[in-house]
Length: 296
Image (cartoon, rainbow, N blue to C red; front, side, top):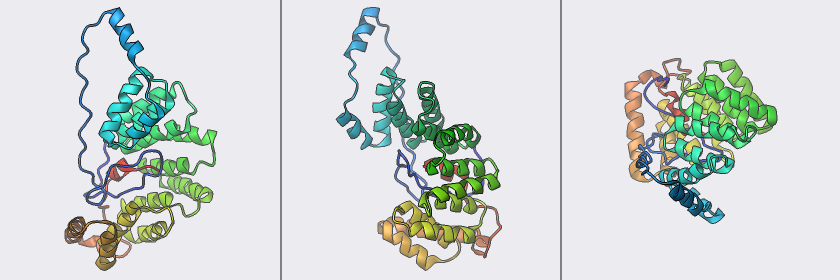
C-alpha cells in the first residue's frame, strides 16, 4: 500500500481540524504507542448490560474540550469510549478519526470517518477527514470520491481543492493536481497550505529549485507555521544553502535539535550530491510518507 520514493520525508501543514503530532527531525515523528487493546468483555446478563448502558453519560462540552488538549493517545482512548456508545455522532466520530490519524492508525481513521458518513453523508469535515486518512495511508485513490462529493456540496472549499490536488498528485495525475491547486489558490490566494502542498509535490520529484519560491511565498504569509519554515530550511539545505537553512532552523528549534537537523542535512548532501545541482531531475529524496501528518 505504501509508495516509497527515497530516503527522507517533508513536513506538510495540517491546517484543518486536527493538528499533527510534534515533529522530530524534519517532520519524522517519534512513533506514538497505539491505544491499548481493550480486554475481552466478560459475560454479562441482559440486566447488567442494560444497567451499564444506562450508567453511561455522554461527555460534557468541558470534558470534550479538555480531551482535545490532551495527546493523541489520550484523545483516541477518550473518544473511542464516547464513540462506542454513540457511533452516529458526527463530531465525536470526527474527533476519533483525527486522533487515530495522529497516532498513525490511518486505516482505522478512514474506517471511523466512513462509518459516521453512513449517517451524515454530507458532513464536510468527515468527508475531508476520510480523505486525509486515505492520503496518509498512501491510498489517495480512495480519497478522491469523498473530496469530489465535498466539492459538489461546497464548490468554494479551498481545503477540499487543496487535498484533491494532493490526491491527484499521489495517484500520478499531475496535471489534474495542478488544476486543483490553481482553483484552491483562486479561492484563497497565497494560502501557505496550498503552496506547501505544491512545493512538496516538486520536492518528491527532486525539484528543490522549483519548490523554493513556493515555500518562500508560503513562509512569508501571516498564517505560516513553523512547519513551513522547516520545509523551506530543508529545501535550502538540500541545495547547499546552509547559512540560510541554519538561520531558519535556529529560529524555531532548540540548539540540540537544530544541530541534529543540520548534521542530517550535511549527511544528505554528502549522500546525494546531485541534490544540490540546479533544477535537479534526480530521484526524489522524499517519500509520500510526508503526507502522513498532513492536513490540506
